[in-house]
Amino acid sequence: MTPAGYQALEDEVSHLKGTERPSIIRMIAEARAHGDLSENAEYHAAKERQSFIEGRVMELEDKLSRAEVIDVSKLSGKTVKFGATVTLADEDTDAKVKYQIVGDMESNAKEGKISISSPIARALIGKSAGDTVEVAAPGGARSYEILKVQFV
Image 1 (cartoon, one colour):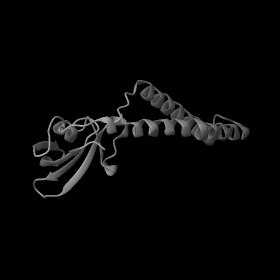
Image 2 (cartoon, rainbow, N blue to C red):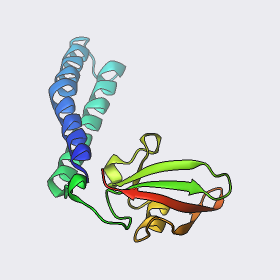
Image 3 (cartoon, helix red, strand yellow):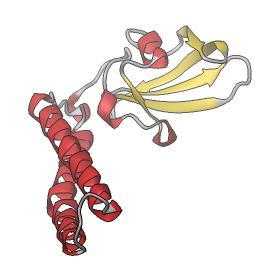
């Protein structure tokens, strides 16, 4: 994963531990004060939320402990690999798109970050500017020309 992706996961863990945990503890204590726990919907909802938060913290900490952080700014080359920012032209519509190939946990198509395991990224890996790639997309096969490969 990239350093930015690693930092985003650390920030989420910090938020969950520093803000969400204390908040949920207060909610559980408040719900307990209302009496009978067997029919207390607030208590059950708070316990369910606590379970979700604890599970998410464990999942994120596991991913952080096993993460391999790659500084994209130190990468270079003319072929597409992890961390590359690739400018593509759709051969049918001539629409241009720009994607950065990142780890699974930090992918976000709206921000132009696609997972290394996505069909587009798998088709791009090892190719260079000027190459044409076929991508099996849910709406049918798409053909793209690689315009530019850069490491930012």
